[in-house]
Length: 265
Image (cartoon, rainbow, N blue to C red; front, side, top):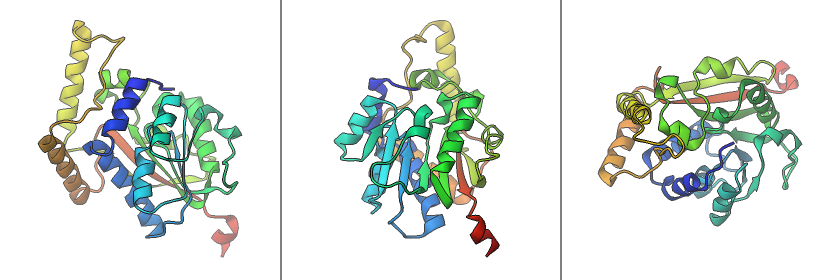
């Protein structure tokens, strides 16, 4: 599991302003509202919540029954600075976790940029356990890094061990009662730029200009004009192209089967 205080500190400082996090948080909210409308009495779990940017974003929009889990003590400490209800837990041991407030399942479980820390066997178990925590008819929303061609020093810096295509995740779903409702790669428009940056990072690593032991992540706030431009471009892409076949991230919305009694009704 990823546990670098310096990276969590950078995340904590920028995730409410950086275009990438703003887009991701907006995607999660849109998925929730498409399923549940304007209801804000939903029970929401963010499994692998990092420093709590998404939980804080949802709280600001009226969702009060939110809870988070993360394996890093540093990440949990940053969440507590935000006044969020978050517990420290390695997700490998999610099967033994009991929520403090209620034993009910959750309407929505979010698990963003976490799958990359697990091998297939571990990930299959994690997906099954996340699914068990979702109410029948509820959602598992997950975003993950995509396509090996985008691998660079950022992956090394954040401890990512793998990247995904849609089929990698869907082949682990049988038996979970989860079914894909929506999926897209993003951002297509920025892919050439992201790819160029990552290949430049790899070239620097090969030349020894950047240390593989002390790599740099892409988590930083660019100049305001550039941050605004990137956000506007990706928002436009979302509107014009709601699904795209290529990008450095893969966003998926999975819905759990309804109860058998409801299916027969």
